[in-house]
Amino acid sequence: MRPPAGFISAFYDPLRNPNAPTIGTATGGDTIASVAFTAPSNIGGSAISAYTAISTPGSVIASAASSPISVTGLTNGTAYTFAVWATNTYGPSAFSAASNSVTPAQPDRGLFGGGVNSGFSLINVISYITISTTGNSTDFGDLITINKTLSACGSTTRSIFGGGQENASNIGINVIQYVTPTTTGNATDFGDLTQARYSLAALSNSTRGVFGGGALSGTQQNIIDYITIASVGNATDFGDLLQITERFSACASSTRGVFGGGSSRNVIQYITIASTGNSIDFGDLAYTANDNSSCSSSTRGLFASGYSTGINIIQYITIASTGNATNFGNLITSDIASGAACSNASRGIFAGGETTNVIQFVTIATTGNATDFGDLAQSQTAQLAGTSDCHGGLS
Image (cartoon, rainbow, N blue to C red; front, top):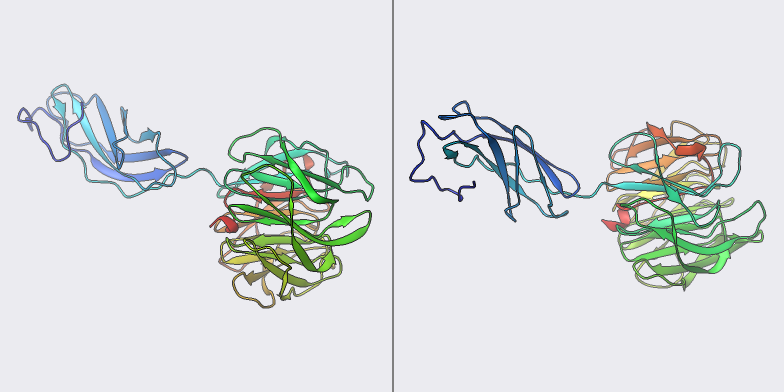
């Protein structure tokens, strides 16, 4: 039984009907909210049989015998408040006050794919983490190919893996494959890169994925190509990098993509993701670094470690403003070269490396050293790729 807003029945008897509950704190999840409350001290003339919460907007209703009430079937991205009432044999109480506003959202998931294990054997494992928590990665599924030195990017609906090597030779592949990040399962064929290559870098905004550089048969490339993430198909030529390069990394805001580092290079360069064309000089990293890793919020990009001298340095840029990188802090370990990175709007994740399966994190807006997050699954350590469904390019 549900009372209309602001309504008390003509049959309402304060000696028989319960008083209104006292609203507590509502918290949001993936299409769900948990609504806490305190039971009324005056339960009326009989025991309270149920407590019911109703959402505004939508009038979504759920009941429970005690606090909290889980309200399911909500729409992610919509802000809700909730009111609660109590019911006994004589009927409902009045509504409680409205709760705080909460906005349900899907978990922020980071994915790591491919690479080599602790014995340096190639693997096709995809594992995932929830970026806003801590803990070890969990098995997601498998790539189509047993693959290392690949790249990854994605949107909220698709995580894309492109290029790489299927064996120890210097022959690259042109396979692009994808998964749906909010589920689990094996990868599906997407199309082909314009040219097969490995040790390339990838970035994306919500609509377009961009792949830059890499190597083919030991020869470095300056190719940039792109895909429309929502539409399967082969990549299209975008333009050229300033220099031929491989073994570097990339990050993005919603409008600008940034490539940094590479084989014996400290160059940072950028593109406007929505407009094809050659990359433009951005500035310099503080050091030259092969096999670095990077991630970003909507405003700040991070570049970490590399083979330069086994360093554990993290440095950052403001994506909208050209200029040299600035020191951010240090990683826990100095052997994260050939690791991978991903991010949500506030947290940057660095995973794996030449001899480690450690996952560590930083708060992107606040300079400082990294903190332990957990471990990668199945000794998945080096030459892997990372992406997420909530990175800075989607903000």
